[in-house]
Amino acid sequence: MKARIRLQKDCIISPIDPRVFGSFIEHLGRAVYTGIYEPGHPTADAFGFRGDVEELIRPLHVTQIRYPGGNFLSGYDWRDGIGPKDKRPVRPDMAWSAIEPNQVGTDEFLQWCERIGAQPMMAVNLGTGTPKDAVELLEYCNGDMHTYWADKRRENGREAPYNVKLWCLGNEMDGPWQICSKTATEYGRIACETAKLMKMFDPTIETVACGSSYRTMPTFGTWEEEVLRQSYPYVDYLSLHQYYTNHEGDVMNFLARSEEMGEFIQEVAAICEKIRLEVGSDKHIGLSFDEWNVWYHYAKNGRVPEKWTVARPIEEENYDFADALLVGSMLNTLLNHADVVKVACLAQLVNALAPIMTEPGGRAWAQTTYWPFLYGSQFGRGTALQQEVEVPTYACGVSPKAPYLSSSAVLSENGAHVTVFAVNKSLDEAMTLELDGLNAVLEQHVTLTAPALDSENTADAQPALPREVAVGAEAPELPAASWNMLRFRLA
Ligand code: AHR
Image (cartoon, rainbow, N blue to C red; front, side, top):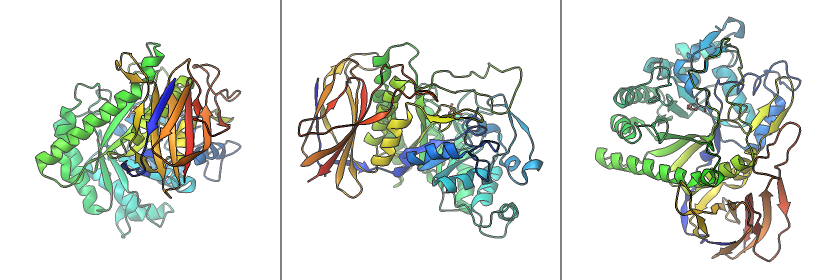
């Protein structure tokens, strides 16, 4: 099969906001306890955070990490997670039917972010929480005056403000599974009042309002409109969430989902523009795709276990190679919408729906989905280029003309390279990829393949690892069912 991509250095989509390479840690399952944090672990640092996990996170160059949820957020009182650890309350976590020991809270998380070199993206509880709770958390994190909560932070051992810039106003507030879900009118109002108050305290912050939980929600569209109408002056981003699954066992349809994700982005961007014109504002609301991934086994809220425990192992997906192909394709979709998507978070980072897995007390390893994200994050910084793509298509449920190729093209920050991320979705045919319009030489070709679509990387065996392919003068060949990075040096 043949494909051609035509690029021009000055035909750009937009500079890529580095914050599209963000991720997410929720108090969910083993994401925190026995994930990032396990004081007794042989690799634990002085703060109880796992060194082996940190070593796997660092190469991902995650720009920001969203915290502390997710569904957990809507029942969380941040005050439970500060101060001396032996005085913190143990609480039931209603969102995930688990026990929350509160041994990791705001200070531990924010200081861990500083150590691993990621920015925090904090979220305030607008389920059971109030605007007052939210602004007090902001005061605790960013306050530089001698006020009650800023002084409390100092008392807890942290003199300098954390200066957290990005704040989510609740999470998925339309979801009936949510603790204290809201109508669009109720949420729009509280989001507006909370953001207003928070910006009064610290005008340098940026806020993210909840879009509807998923595109398939009955609220989708009207929710976004109503929320933006109510909160426009105080909100900077609107959130989108999307997980795909292959329950039907139709892999070609599954792989086409990244096209659907593009339509979703365009729809939400159009809604933002419509409301901008309606309210007569010069400000453009950016999109925060702050939960995206593949997810198969949703633990329905009805499935309450008899015994609630700390670090109940839930939502632990063993991602296979087909999942990695879709994750690579979804990342291409985000880059191809760099003009509107300014923030994104792969949901999540460790154990729960994660590219990194751990054994309690034991090993940590990278899943298949780790690799497309790692290369995207390391080499996808710069400016997204427009592509004219010629490639055969196939018919599936998602689209009568789904392309066999998913690709994105990035001009590096120093202007020396163009990097193309390319997924060949054909399961049985290699694809020759011609690049037109650039005076460039292929310098590096990395490919990710696996013995089978259902190959999984485990602690014991890693069948899906990236490898370098020798480059020559001829057009590169993308193996059947493969993710690829092609790095061209501009002449
Ligand atoms: O990431 C897992 C869950 O998915 C989050 O808690 C929630 O926001 C979403 O429904």
